[in-house]
Amino acid sequence: MNLRFLGKSLVSLGRALGLMAWTLLGLWTALAVFFTAPVPSWAATTLALAVMGWHLYAWRHLFRSLAALAVCAVVIVWFCSMTPDANQVWAPEQARMPIVKIEGDKVHVANVRDFRWHSRTEFTEGFYDRVYDMNAINSVYYVVVPLAQLDGVAHVFLCFGFTDGQHVAISVEGRRVKDRPYRVIASMFHQYQLIYVIGDERDVVGVRGSVWGQPVRFYPATSTPERKRALFLDMMQRAHSLEEHPEYYNLITNNCMNNITDHIRALGYRPLPPDWRLLLTGFSDRAAFDLGYFDTDLSFENARIAFRIDEWMRTAPLDEQFSARLRENLARQVAEVRAQAAK
Image (tube, rainbow, N blue to C red; front, side):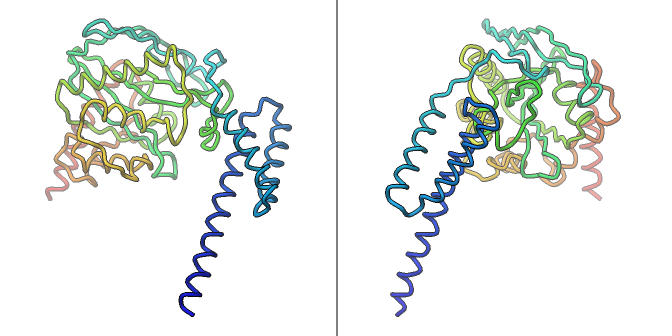
């Protein structure tokens, strides 16, 4: 009796899992049709609903299931054959790809972004050209920007400092077409392209805390001068490759975290183990802390407090002294947290 019950339970579980997998396949196919079909939006919606409806109707009927699988196969082939078109009208802050030229120890970058933000929708566009001496790199910071009310989801990027006083942010983002807002589901269906935004800290960092009102944590990373240089070079080479070989951004497979960890692995840093915190990017700072990537003797809980900078940014002017004042403020916050912890 127990074996018979176990057998029936396993059969029921298998059917439930099969139905779940079948439904997910149909849902993915319908969404791919909705987002990528080269037809008007009303027609794409109709096609997507028809695909999903047929897929569910075909469950457990051999010939209908084969027809549904054929539809899925066609959509998958179509989806995988798509290639990014870089010649589109992009959102202003992502309109210019950085142009990178590497000559020995010097990296020439055109289109370094330097927007002056007055509000979320009002800004003064700005770009400049800069030469970075990789031998002058003296600091790297890991920046975590959690989405509002979603601590587990965050945008992450790196900032580099140089002994000559320069600072630059490198942010891997989904490049948006003008007037097309970023949507989480859409980001998995070839709706955005990959861009390495190379910009002034007062723009790339400042806008998130000062204008967008997002939480921002600015952690100092520990590494050798050679690895800091190699990391910067690897990111510049990747940015350069995107000039001629555009790629689609994907929330799951080709995002900010994926690319940063790829750079780290390529340079022989301490191996990054499989970790759910690297998928839920809002918790990636905990993973980095546990792996010893942060230059601090504070506990993780205190480090999260000491290196949070958005409250300071709400009253700090986004001017030429932003990066220097930011680091001065970090030193004050660390000292205050350390003193409080010692009580």
